Amino acid sequence: MSDQFIVGIIVFVLASFIGFEIIAKVPRTLHTPLMSGANAISGITIVGAILASAMGSGTFAAILGFLAVMLAMINVVGGFLVTDRMLEMFKKIPRKSESEEGR
Amino acid sequence: MTELAYLAAGVLFIVGLKGMTSPRTARRGNRIASVGMLVAVVVTVVDLLSLDTRLVWGLVIGGMVAGAVIGAFLAIRVQMTEMPQLVAAFNGFGGGASALVAAAAVVASDAVMPTETAVTISLSLTIGAITLTGSFVAFGKLQGLVPSRQMFLPGGSFTNGAIAAAAVIAAGVGMMYDSTNAYWVATALAALLGITAVLPIGGADMPVVISLLNSFSGIAASMAGLVIGNQALIIGGALVGAAGLVLTLEMAVAMNRSVPSILFAKFGGTAAADSIGTQPVNRATADDCAIALAYAQSVVIVPGYGLAVAQAQHAVKDLANALEARGIAVTYAIHPVAGRMPGHMNVLLAEADVSYDLLLDLDQANPKFKQTDVVLVVGANDVVNPAANNDPGSPIYGMPVLNVEEASTTIVVKRSLSAGFAGIDNPLFYQDSTLMYFGDAKKALEDALSALENL
Image 1 (cartoon, rainbow over the protein chains, first blue to last red):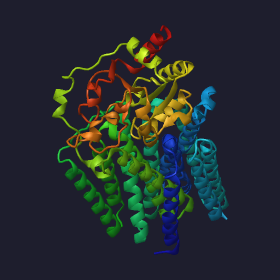
Image 2 (image 1 turned 120 degrees about the vertical axis):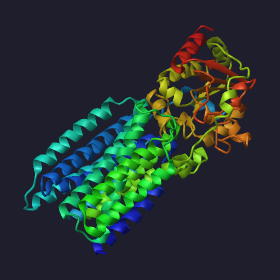
Image 3 (image 1 turned 180 degrees about the horizontal axis):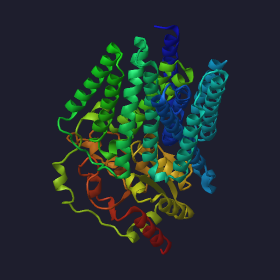
Image 4 (image 1 turned 90 degrees about the horizontal axis):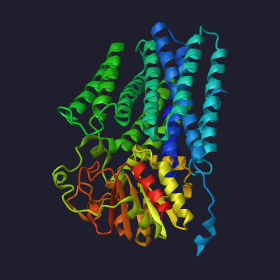
């Protein structure tokens, strides 16, 4: 196995553990925006798509690359935008009765 | 330099996700993650420009513009009640993109590659293909294009197992004989598996399915990253894979079922369904409900999928406002699997301007019901079924539920006495302290509000 591949596996395992630790702390109230936001991050495959598309050898590879870029871009732009739209709605609204709750 | 910039993108993703651990910082976190994405894309383009090879920029730019327009259109137009199907569709696009990246690598190398690359390409192709088709079946079920009930395919799990085994064999043939066609066969079989695996699963189990497909879309991206040796893909994909898996496991715990049983086993009772509605219930009118609510000191609202179907989130909030104006304390108790995706109800209530500190989790809500005067259940059934606590014969026995029957009065807003997803009767409905208020959730709550105002 090449060194590059082994480094890749190491990065994959460590990043997975970081992901577990962080995501386990996300409150349930944010699980929907978490999922759509994570979804946008999985659009990182756009990088691979651009590389595949630009260096495409032959028509078939170029078509695959184009489709990959388009699908990944839907994910990236749509995912981040809709997550922002949702998170904008999460507000803590101060209440008049809040001081009385301490009784 | 390029490698370090990809690492920076990965770090921005991690910092961004960390922001999601509190509603206060979540919006900033999402923006930090999007900056990470921008960094990764810009670095890739700059890196390509520095290479003096034949580049097909038209396709890249065309694909980016088309994708950005479609993505923005979907994100801006979607209703909050439709969020589960949008996320399902986005999962599918992500998985599909990763499969296509792997496919392009197969074409570019003419399937001649080292074993480890062949393995990761196979994983990226098949997981990506399952995610693509599985997500679109899930989308169809959530959108009502495909029946959302449980279905049974001939052969059941055996058929799925056979398709999976055939896909593995095809990929193995591809590796051994450097055959591009064998890889395409493996991909097609995986795509078929996505359909046959998700089609039988019932609508109320969609939170688990969407979470799992979310995880798959991340893993497919990570595998594609290993194929092309790109750290940003590996890190980003691994984070999403972990996120989806955490949510999947949490949903399974909230249903007291294992992930395999949710995906592969038939669920629910049918025998008891015949007797549903044969016992007398306390039918209540809008006026009865208004009176019960008006003289309460504390009210807990329990939303379910029926609230989303009826688009009743604003009607709930209007009623809560009227109660609060009378000095009544109103909070919301949300079961982890209420709705069709994790956190679905929270988003709907946030849309209706409910303050997020009033949204109580299962563990926070349950100790409060004994001291609660009125619980208002809107379009929920199985998640408030006391049989889960006290009937060992029930299919949902052991599932953590909201113990709303402990409140002095429970009002259940429901279209009819029909069973929930589990297909079983709910003893809550026949309790003396329960008022059954039949009707469409939105209309029913509006009527209760006007009755309250006329008291």
